[in-house]
Image 1 (cartoon, rainbow, N blue to C red):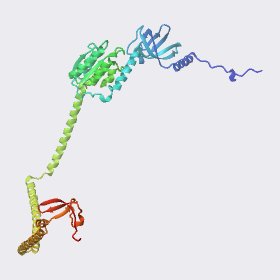
Image 2 (cartoon, rainbow, N blue to C red):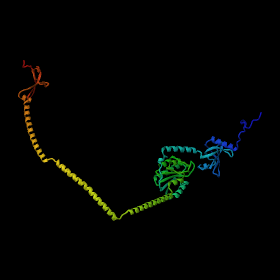
Image 3 (cartoon, rainbow, N blue to C red):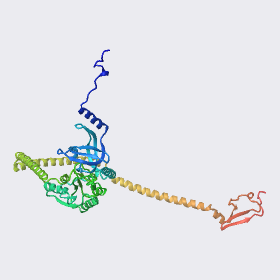
Image 4 (cartoon, rainbow, N blue to C red):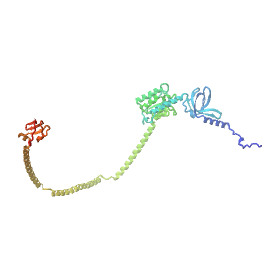
Length: 453
């Protein structure tokens, strides 16, 4: 049999890795398998290189691991670890290829227990946020021109020197009122809140700075207390928070009307620089001067134009006199023409009225004659009616039943008031009513006799 060919895949030579390639693949494998994770341990063998990188060992009771934190991350740590410090690091598990050493690349570092503080920070932030303490609608604007600035900080704080230096450089005309309060330690939060309340009640400043320098989360914790946030919210003047460095955020920053990255930045926000005011005033003065020059130039041009069109007063008076005479003539004609037309119309109407005017005297005489005739007719008619009435009254008197009764007659009726005309309407032992001229009488009937029998 012939030997297998080198081109046969089953007998191909496996690829050979260099040590560098091996370590790179292992590093990539570790980085993909272990994402960023928080690791707790104790600092050991801490070294700060001239480049600014930190090298140390992170250990516990049973194991240890090498760690590196590069300068770009280390500058935001907020503190420099020391031998034996208990810390928590957020790191990426990897391999240092040059030595083949397994290590972690630290992205962030905090003192042990900071995680619990962060959770407390987030809980309080959520609580106050739900109450509306951080709403943008309640943020008060800073005054345009600040005359007095209040500062709440410690007398020994470096932040106070930074703020005073910045204000002296930028706005030496602004009055500064200090409300001293400790910025860390037991009871510091309550004293900071009292200082804010004092500044709010006195109302002697236009804006209030609450500030301190950088530090660990424990050092800045007084500004994460609820009492400080509520004091800022209740303040009657705008409040600027300048606590820590640019990367530090506290509850006071969210409650304040404006947050500054540093205490110095807070001072710069609180008062506009004197040079800026002077520059603005100079610019306004230049604008005003140019505007006045433009107005004067236009006025001069208008004056020249008017002077060219101007005529002498005597000519103007003569022209106005002629114009006045023409207007007077027009007015006279305008007044007299309607009067003349109305006079002619009035005369025509008078003539027409005279033709249709009735003869009042003859009508009045006719009316008097008819009035006399009417009066005589009414008198005669009234006399005739009275005579007829008297005759009818006499006839009525003759027919009056009462007169018949007075002559001795009577009206007979039964007990129900029905007048009886014939004996057949009466029965023996009936009671009848007899009406006489002077009254009535009830009579009992003993017997009835018909005259026809």
